[in-house]
Image 1: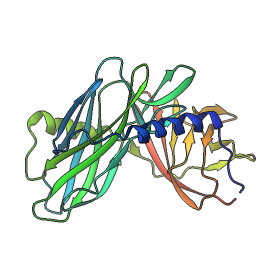
Image 2: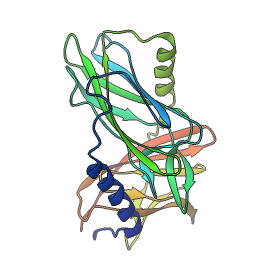
Image 3: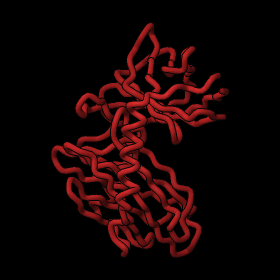
Image 4: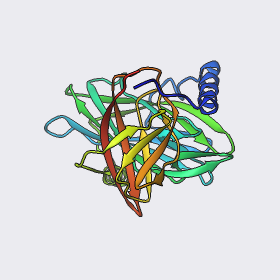
Length: 264
């Protein structure tokens, strides 16, 4: 399959945002690790529980948005900044898995974005490889009101500490809000010119797709019984790439991970 084309307006917008971030040289929020950071528009907190007997760690990133502010899902849509979460600076902790709640869509000018306009708690799973592990999370997020403000913050938790009741409830809420896993495979393919991802057997009221770095998708619509998802940006080449689709209906959501083999 030939390389997919790019939506140049969307790519230009994302490139400019990335350039602003790099040129600004955004430092971590604090040289001293902390588990809470307050900035305009949001309070960002790292929550965690001690590892269980198998070393499994449950943690969460809580983004307490102020009214009128938004942040973004894995694929931000036509505008915005995808979150980047990294734990490589941790001590004795590895294997991060991030499970986002199902996003919603909101309009920003002429663009439609995917994300959250209410406080959100994101589930984090990892594994402890040491007896006294310390979780260090570097989070780069887009926080938006009229304009998008990139925020990069280092947060840290001693995993020997028990969360208080409110934080323990927030961690539970993060894991309960994960979309249910769908066992049935998706019948997914690109159309002939590579401008849309097509998923046959459309179900649900909305459908979101996120791919590896370099991919971007627009709002899905149903056509002839299939979801058609515009491809806003794509790598020029690719092999087996892992994608995630989230289907929503009312307050329920289902997530499916799938691979598409790309051949230029």
